[in-house]
Image (tube, rainbow, N blue to C red; front, side, top):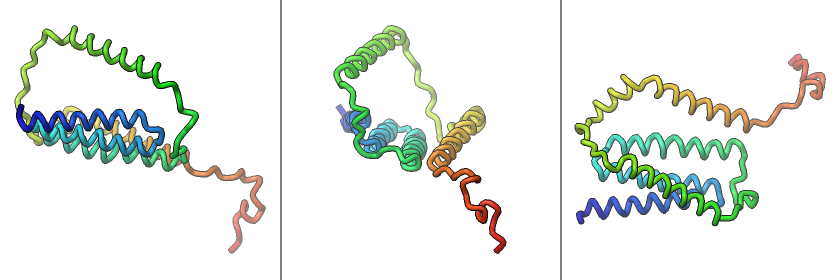
Length: 179
């Protein structure tokens, strides 16, 4: 067992522990911060596997953009940040359903892909990957950026206090002052 294997195992355990903390915490902001830990551990795994571009994309897009968007949406919509007692559910049925789903998907994955051998592709450089993204995948890339922008604008619009109707305002305010 090499040092890289040990580091990959530790990073994997940190990612799994962070993921479990995301889904088990009762505070939304803390769940977002645990998500940063889990996604950061995945980025470390990418670095250990020699995929530097994927690691930096993981940090910039997921940790830097998605988590920040999640936290801004929580803050701008004035969602409850503390504990939510209305979200408490029995944990045992959820754990049983999750375990059964995981086992079923694992069995399906092994049955379908167990006999295939995949030859690894040629090692890509950041230039080749960037060329592929901006040549072949430019439309989905731009659609995703517009979708994220629309989500942020929607969160801002939803968080603004509604203005009172014009007929309830005093006459001087509704018609504009002469000053």
